[in-house]
Image 1 (cartoon, rainbow, N blue to C red):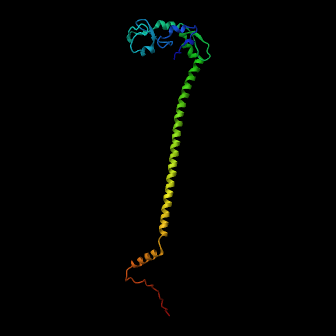
Image 2: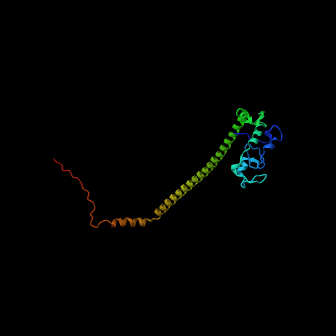
Image 3: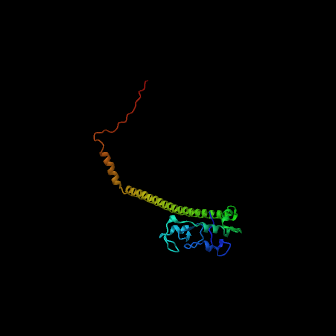
Length: 206
C-alpha cells in the first residue's frame, strides 16, 4: 500500500505544491490529465458530475482522460522522507515502496494499525455482549420475580381453600350429624333381619 503523502513527506519545503490536486488539495499518486492538459486526482475525477475541467470549464469525456505520466515521473524523481516512526530514511519517491518492504518502522506501524483496528472491533463486540448480558440478567430477574409471585399466590390459594373447608366442617351441628345417621338407618330395607351369630357346638363323644 503506497504511503499517503503530505507536506511533511517532502525533503524540500513547498515541493508538495507541484503534486497537489486543485480540488481536494491533497498530494495525489494517481494524477489524471484531461484533453485541455489540466489535471486532477483520480478520486476527484470520478466525483465530478458535470464533466467539465475544474480550471477552464472545458467539457471532457472519461474515454479521453489518461494518467499523467509526466507528473508521476516528476513525483517519483522527487526527494521524500519515510516518515514511519523514527525512521530517518530519505530518497526518491520511486524508491519509497522498495524501502517500505524492509523498513522496520513501517512494518511496526502497519502491525500497530492492524492491532488498533482489531482492538476497536473487539471493544465493539465486547460492548454488544455486555448489553446482551445485562438484558438477560434483567429477564432472569423478572422471571424469578414472577415465579415467586406465582408461588405466593398458589400458597395463599391453598391456605384459603383449606381454611374454608375447615370452617365448613366445624359449622356442622351435632343435630345435623344425628339427622344424617337417621337418614342412613332409614335407607336400610324394612324386613331385613339382624344378623344371626352362629355358634359351633361340639358333642361329647363319651
